[in-house]
Length: 122
Image 1 (cartoon, rainbow, N blue to C red):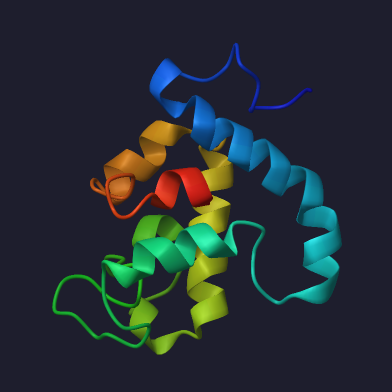
Image 2: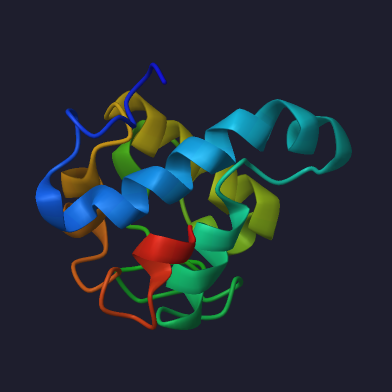
């Protein structure tokens, strides 16, 4: 297997997560043709369950994934004014830009992997 999800590229505590992501990435091309949502849609839904409603308007953090105003340059303004799919795609693009780094998820949603197995089921 090539790409970011191999046994050699993942920290020990993230192996199950990496294995799940490898499967998700392998199926991403097929899923993208059928869905307006990004390849890691289930991961974003899981994180959102512990954050807020998709149309939350702050203050300070906005939308279902509780993004700051203009979050990392991937959105403009209040994420709560964007459709769910747009919020998920912003998160997906930012995570992809990080090289799908486990640490990116920890920095943005510090308890994401403790929340009912979000990391392993992504």
